[in-house]
Length: 396
Image 1 (cartoon, one colour):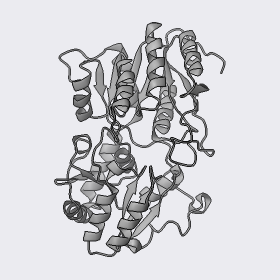
Image 2 (cartoon, one colour):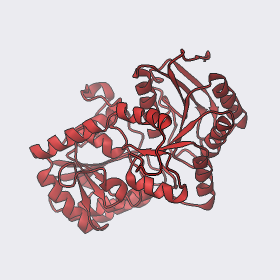
Image 3 (cartoon, rainbow, N blue to C red):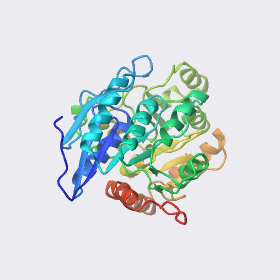
Image 4 (tube, one colour):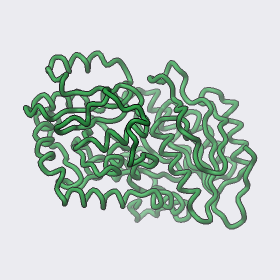
């Protein structure tokens, strides 16, 4: 990448993190953010991304790259980083120092790249650059002292922070007392096509979510903390055989226990399991076909599934976790389950299905989706760096 020095008078933003063609939700998020910055007048966007993010032994899927996904639609992207090669970290710092941006933006989401991004952020600050960290996760869902240490190491290497819920901000402030943060919910999904040619994306008998009846959707990486077992047990308690569940996403570990549970509950005929990476086109199809999205999470810091549901006009049933509950309008855009039991989920799901197609529900979701836009999200980062929150502000 040839160095692009921003014209005088423009605010330059350097994003350091994965973008497409990496196919994680973080890469999709940073790509959308970079493209939004590109569209803002008097703002120059630069990106330093990874050429190697996860070693094969750590990544659960076949590949962390999507060969069909284009690079971001921005002027300058440099794929130079390797999370496990410190020499590339030094190269990224030198590049950042040369570019001399007004704002450096880095994501915090996983313990593995935290050493790399934390080291880079620290060195950028030593060179007088201002770092803003987008905090997706501060704790790993399978916690350990090492993971916590790495995540906290990166979190400390920042001047300002953007968080996605008041609950996340409260939790974050407990470990990192600071007023230099703002809260903005995750924006709605971007880059997911609304109109599809189903033949062009190879939709065939694997998908049964368009069969007659009512379809529930569990979407995203399949990990223990996301509570798929609870969703399956709740489905078994719902006697209406026309209510089915589609599970779409790569499995973080073996699905033997899930397969055994489906068999034990005798609901194989009501569950469509797609245990692999799902493209944006396929995801769009699944969200369009479903009636209700399920988020039966045991823990959460932030989730991109809920705003994605809103993007397709779909309501959700969520666990009673602060980070989820504050993102729904109960009884309109979603329903919170008061007790974390299959029985409670089954009851709320059935109640929600009776109201999911009301005009009031559709209108409320539309208004919620309009409020979760990328322009205000990007501008919150710009505003945070112009006017960091003061001690008497609540971060909004």
